[in-house]
Image (tube, rainbow, N blue to C red; front, side, top):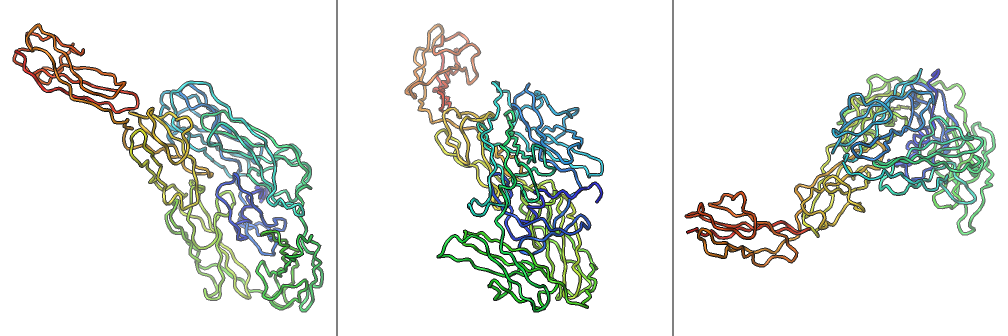
Length: 607
């Protein structure tokens, strides 16, 4: 692997999570996870290494040879004339060279390749995105892009800065007798409705390569642990905060039972359970595992090794009655039976990935064919994202917003009794793309009515939630967040839209426009009449009738249906040119928050 270092970091931890049968949430923020032990790993072959979990099962980890870093963010006010700044965060290796390209509605802006970008009139009404490309010697190039911002406006005002709250380090399991092996960063930011966060874990104040996720496995680390969190949000200046240092030893796990004894056929293993007892009413229970799978009937502190155990790993799992906590003993590797030579299992026809690589659509992978009949094979599947995290297990997978723009790979593992385990890696033919959104604004577009952003069925089924910001003529409505909004008088006559912000990495920013302009409250009106004698030189007057209180009026006089250019008062002096023509008057009433109404009088013939 030379300089393409095995950089597991949190990616390896997340991979371990999925392959151990635990759910890996799509969004890192506000989630706390546990992970199997990643200390015992074999050699790297074809960018894959196999590790042993706490329960004795093996799980694969895809080792990436690419430069690694967080998704870039954008800081600054989304106003014409303002300057935006890219928020890159820390990359691994630290000396990676970063270049940038700014995009306007996903189209590259010519010459905009710096770390800052000044918004121009061409950006008005459009979303901005920045793309960061990182290169380093002996590493594959990596390109990541930010979430698209809300549309740029002309609104003025001071640029707000995010305010970072307390940055802290928490643990997954807060039970005093068993600190967690996985720690997470807690960071609050005020003022912006949606804040994207970048994380960098530090050891003795120095960045830990690849440790840029919300969670971090401190096992194998020493010294003082802290985390630096940068928050960024469209329209705000970014803010950064760093937690106070904590000793890594604070997170040492509670050890499980200690297993001793011989490893030969017929030998008896004995476990000494020193895990603290928490309740006399709920005593500890035990279960022996073979390669992570429970052994039927093996529920005591002793276990006699059988022929089925040869060539496998044994572990004792203790349930100390702490909610769903499970504690594992040291692993015991039982040697294979003497004189047994495993045959070579080989792949004959490579597996194939099929299905549309579109969010919400099912992708499948075939098993391929092997040198052993299918009825004797056991085949497992692991879907990997490019960063090495496991996206799913099993022969099918439905991508969501977190995989958009990424090309998935699948590790197909085949095993059979008497044969070596064989693996083959296949790659999807194209990156995942986002399905066209079917969201819409529903409800009556009238002042006082409630309107709602309808859910996008495929999007919501994928378990993705979003934050919604409502806009009036493209400008954010103060305090208007959430899936529903009640229209006010200020919305009358304006174009309503909603910005839907994804809360998962790689999610798609959406702007949903209402089908029409917002109508005001109904205005009480009446048909006007013309009062006066219609002969040249006489003055005519409009009698408006009854209208809503507070209505403002404008007038237009018409001759045979054509507007008289200089006749726009409530009175009109009949002219010689009017003789024999039909005169009418049009009265237009308007009031803030109400629908504007025009009424035209009946025609009268001038004498």
